Length: 115
Image (cartoon, rainbow, N blue to C red; front, side, top):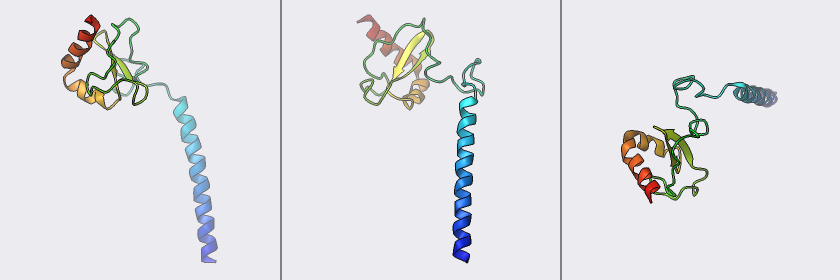
């Protein structure tokens, strides 16, 4: 009898989790994208797709200015605009290093534009 109750409790819990996860997924898709306002609605930066200014100077580098990895080897490059300059990084993780010394990496990008 105790085993039956335990299995019943586990089944009810699993069904509850499935119902809750589908509700959370539905509500996540209904949320507006972060970055619509200056600095983002929650103070975070805009997503990569929303952060690229179409009037920005294009980034012609074939490699990530931070890691030196060839762009596209780790999936779609992480792109954003920094002071009217498009920046393409190999991954979102390189953004932290870029933010520490952006001038260093912008110089690399602009040097490639002149070639």
